[in-house]
Length: 117
Length: 111
Image 1 (tube, rainbow over the protein chains, first blue to last red):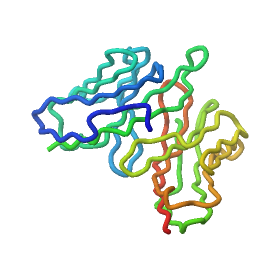
Image 2: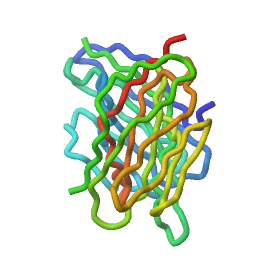
Image 3: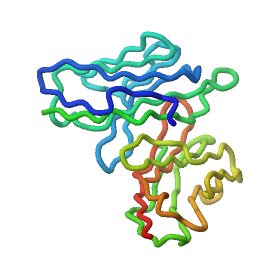
Image 4: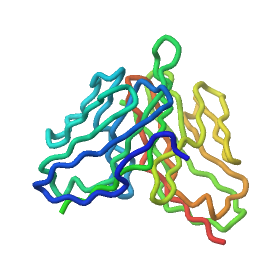
């Protein structure tokens, strides 16, 4: 069983809809990530939060808006998406090591499969 | 820049065959190396890792050794099962929250 929980597992939305993806972890990890994965490709980093502050935004279009309400929760708000945004969206977390260093080991959820019509 | 190169797939094997998936890397500094596995319809799971040269990571019968001299981290398993059918990603991490993934190698195991 994965310790990173993502909802919903599947989402179909129109280009004018507003929806959100949610992610939760209770491992005490202080870094949380959003990745996008297209079919037959590796995951691509979108955003990283560290200690609830946005640390990395990989030049993601503003129609994707991340939010980290607390250390256990991560949301991705979606608005005015395009069909090419259809993909598997993966949430991940990682543990801070001694001295605050990140160990690099990622714990992934099962993903939210998004279809934009 | 940092990069990971994996052998192209798909790899098709019969059950109980020996598996090798090649992975080489380019990195500045001293990366940690990982193999992640993605089963159909799921997210990625860590399969094994190694954090310094000559470390051997192992899990579920899979092994990989961190070879600094050849900048390689090849994945091996002595006897594959149908349940090992998945996509395998080699990855490296040097810090700054950014993991570099290889392109992935799809493995099919036939009964």
